[in-house]
Image 1 (cartoon, rainbow, N blue to C red):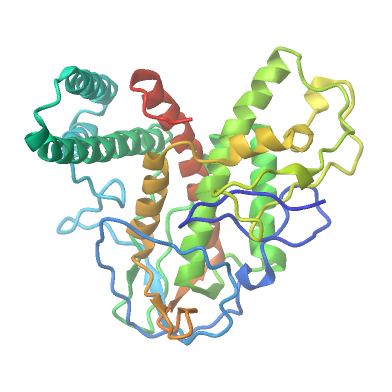
Image 2: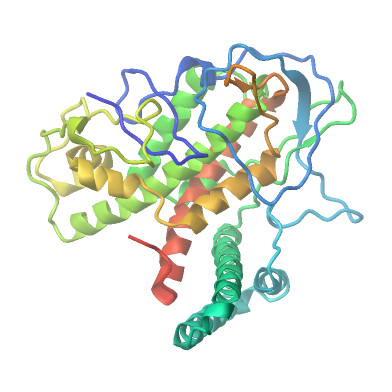
Length: 404
């Protein structure tokens, strides 16, 4: 069976190889955890940027010289209060909603609806405007482009507010921006263990696939000490986080359809049938070399009873067109949010174009992180993707912005 998945120009899902457990196939071996090392040196610059570009270069990064460092979660103190989310708001609408979210969170849904109504009114008014004379047409178009960019940023931050609110409603603290330790010999600080909270937001069917996703990333080290420190390329860690967001987005989307068909008793009757993915149409959002494959259930537990019908089997039954639709991020606003959220946590990757045209990652840094910390990062990313789908769908119901 061929592999499949989705990526954008800047984001990609995990590469994979065969494995024996049903579920998503594992990423390539170089993405799995590296040998633990206690040696670390500072040298991390956590600057803020307005966007990020995790390039689509795969995970084959054997030839790079990496600086070593250890990271820690920002500590809560009276002098430096931790923000509720790593990504800071820039638009007036986003800043207003952020303030409401922190001071009067119960008013946030109404405030978001009000802002969406205003955006809709502004867009309707703009459509009714009469284009100016020929000599002013260029200026008119330029003003329209500026307004469109402002609306896009406002939409992104409205969606982000809804995502952050979802974390707050589930009593989950988002992981703050990763910062370097000033003392190279100091221990890595631990984030609060919220594994059960992050798992509780998913259906049992989706959680089964998420657990397989985690097992494949951790590999055989999953049975080792959770406080063991491993060194991972910051570039790889960022790509893993972004890919897990996209995985959570896909999983929530297809799980909603699966639960609906299960409730309506319209699940496919031939649960043994598997679709062949040879007829997947070329798509700029698909990276054929970095895709995720789903294998079928091997225990034969899927019978006529819909309760025993697994989500994995349902995904296997979907045709190529449906798979592409479910695995594609629908809006440019959501793609931008994935990029910005990833950058807010890990910073901008230092990548250059070499003289021969290859990508030079020699300045990439190694991040020291515990197995429990890596688990938390992946679970948060999957939750973020799940919430992203819900937030995007809600905003779309109030303000149409998703293009077919």
